[in-house]
Amino acid sequence: MGSRFPSHQLSNGLYVSGRPEQLKERAPTMSSVAMPYTGGDIKRSGELGKMFDIPVDGSKSRKSGPITGAPSRTGSFGGAASHSGPIMPNAAARAAYTTSGVVSSGGTGSVSLKKSNSGPLNKHGEPVKKSSGPQSGGVTPSGRQNSGPIPPVLPTTGLITSGPISSGPLNSSGAPRKVSGPLESMGSMKNPGYAVIHNQAVTVLSQDDDFSFRKNFPKLILWSLILLFVMGFIAGGFILGAVHNAILLIVVVVLFGAVASFFTWNTCFGRRAIMAYIARYPDAELRNAKNGQFVKISGVVTCGNVPLESSFQRVPRCVYTSTSLYEYRGWDSKAANPTHRRFSWGLRSLERRAVDFYISDFQSGLRALVKTGYGARVTPYVDDSLVIDANPGAEELSPDFVKWLGERNLSSDDRIMRMKEGYIKEGSTVSVMGVVQRNDNVLMIVPPPEPITTGCQWAKCIFPASLEGIVLRCEDTSKNDVIPV
Image 1 (cartoon, rainbow, N blue to C red):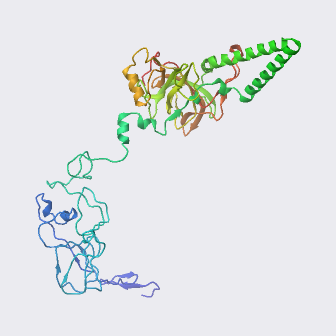
Image 2 (cartoon, rainbow, N blue to C red; image 1 turned 45 degrees about the horizontal axis):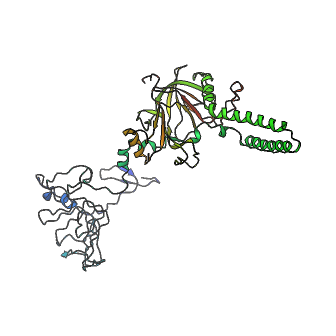
Image 3 (cartoon, rainbow, N blue to C red; image 1 turned 180 degrees about the vertical axis):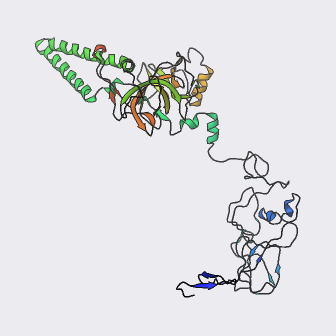
């Protein structure tokens, strides 16, 4: 054919494009002979028994796979070894005995195989038996080399099951399996909430999240007032001693008393004033709320993916829990914390956590995800549902309270203690203040980027306070009827 593309004619007379295929001499292959019925005896299973290092019946070796480079198949191979890889030629007239490697042979004739004794020797002068994979089940490796893990010896019944033999409470020998390492599972069994507490989805709150008038009041103004009163007292005392006129000193004392009264009033009733401010703040409808708008939503709580459990009462399916232990310090009592003053209550232990949850709006019926987990900033105003006063010197402590102290390695001694616990469980009614965020038809309440101020409440003599993060307000849930969800 007159074409620039090469072509050739087949044996049937058909012309096809391309050059004729050059036939390559294929190496002869030997197929494995089918094994007879073994009746469940693994010793008669041939290759299967050799995989588990179990001696098999018969001394005839079976070879599977191609034999490449052999000039002649005449001759005999001695031994009962089974070879699963190709047999490659070698210039030397020797052969090494391995399972997954290559067996080198000479040309024609009779070649006898023997084990290779090259390599390090043990303390008795014998060759060290090598295995390149981990050995399990306490099986002693044989004289050959293994490139993979050696499975443990099967039971004497010959039954082959799926999965590793080490799974379950027993090991390969039938004895109870021993586990080394840190017993985290035992710790989680002792404390059911261990895994949940150390979850990244759980926000751990500290005492700094509580309302504090000293924290909200500007430090610069506070120290300026202190400096002015110190100077006023010095000037009033100097005038009183010099000209015997006490008017300036009286004015300074009256002003100092008024300012101190304001500070004391805000310290004692500031938290109550903030809760009143939250109650007066108007509720918004999620249906009409815009993206980025600061709103207050009131509705029913539904748990998210990670529910909590209260520490002392073990109340399940909570979205917020708070358990605090206070101690009263007398004149010669021990301090609960480094900043604990005498004749006052000091915080000794605090467990306060929050997670993401859903809230169903009363106004519109829509459901929103409140992002209070994953380390979000949260300011809780949740009433305590349980208050326990304990005085070991006057009365015996309850077993549950002693158990709770023991789980946290807290000693009771003769200290006067008070425990407070509050929580928000599923089905409770709460008020949430935050910023609306819409993301792919998902409605969320997220913390605001900046703190929200309440402003001055002159009618109640309350200074401004700042609210950081998502604000949670919930009354005592033990007194209210919980709505099933």
